[in-house]
Length: 110
Image (cartoon, rainbow, N blue to C red):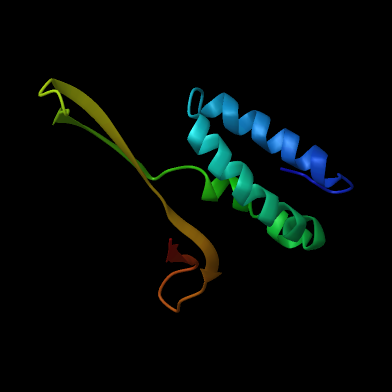
């Protein structure tokens, strides 16, 4: 995302519109990402080098999604299936160089 010359609100709206289009119906996920973006965007505006690294896009795209069903018995002894979805992300932010390869990335796991 090219944020050069953009204000905080413009960057936030542009990012969140794309994010919500890629992840429809995930209101809790949208809220968590909005809170994260509110902290990261000012840093990106102040340091354009990091904006060019697509940090927000990389932070908010899960590496794997695991979904499974759990049968749950409530207080009235009724059994109902609940679908659980887990998002897993490995964040790659810091490029490093090694002698035997041209470029690798250092994983930072949250």
